[in-house]
Image (cartoon, rainbow over all chains, first blue to last red; front, top):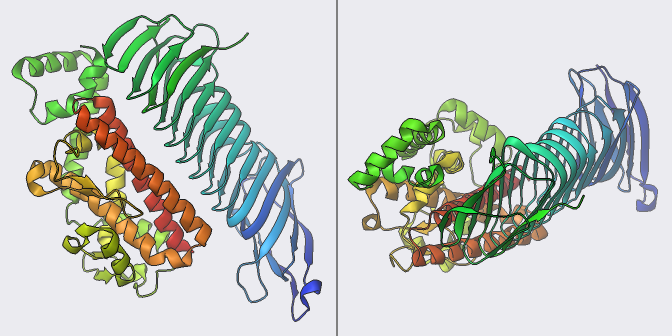
Length: 284
Length: 258
């Protein structure tokens, strides 16, 4: 058990309140890293040591708390009177260590981890490179970017775009006012929803997979390699449909129709209230 | 008729609203389609659950989870949620938001301007119901503006609560729509009462995005009025309504945790 309260500056003039903390604690497999910062930034990088190095900088004094009790390593910062403080955390953690980051006005960056990642912020962007198993990333006012991850992936924003690249696993992405771009995604289960934004997907269609892409005010574009085997269900109210693949309609009712590509083993649902829905053949 | 078109009409089957030939065809299809049978079973469960929602306080286990999630720092004037864990929970007045609500929403005079904390919890349950696949059922017979002038969507930050007069829909349907209406209203009041505790920029973003969703809801409703049999529009409207609940729930959580 280790509880550290590091470096508290008191009664100093503002110019002297810049505080830097640098400490390293040993950790064991199975522990999880939890970091909270009301405002500022949290950056976590993976390394191959069984230790967590915490560097923190604040311009407002205050302290950094590190608690290694039990299965968690908890890191947080507080101001001189215990209130919220702006802090820049730079943390290095074992690549196997799952992380949970939370903040309000906080930008979040994670890289080099082969472990679960959970991020929640309000006014900040989220940028994650890596992660396995459960990956959950949410912001309200910031964009969310995820690269090189695999597992059960859930990403969301309210007012910004979602961008996922080189992903494998089950994917769920939802925003209100932003585009959703999924590039080089290998998945048998994808669900994407936005209200005011474009939806773009590129990747193979898995046999028996289920894919759902929906927007109200935007385009839906799928870029598919080879000859996909899928039943395709298209719905729009005022939009258009374009396809690079030969389409033979099996059912149509106004602007709702479905057709089969190849064996039809997967299911692809494409919906845009008033945008263009397009199936593109991926360039070799 | 394809599998999927029958799936679109399962709620009509459930409500015994298909013609006899259609019902026979649907049952023949159900006999050979496991996916549609599973969906029908889910619809039955959801309907049963939705109907049990009305005026029933949530179970203690559920309530404790909700209280833990949203009750860390209750707004001024609101009792600590931890103390309110049963059906005896009092009604909480949110007068702070009443004037603004009244000014925006002409229906406000007919609506509760206070809510019980279990009802707030029920908002979460309603969300679960909507996301569980009952949305088509909930909105399929939702009266669209042109088809039924009694139903309307308010505009502005408080918009989206669906106003349905009892005569406009069958009792079960009205109850389900009213549950949504109440959930939206309760969550909006949480946001209204606690907006001073959020960063103004966050409030602006939330309101702007609620307006985006309200616009989408209104467009979908107008489209549905023009094409009331369009299953896509019903589903799309339902999904957009669920997104509004999602956003309001998230906003309420932000308020409670700030």
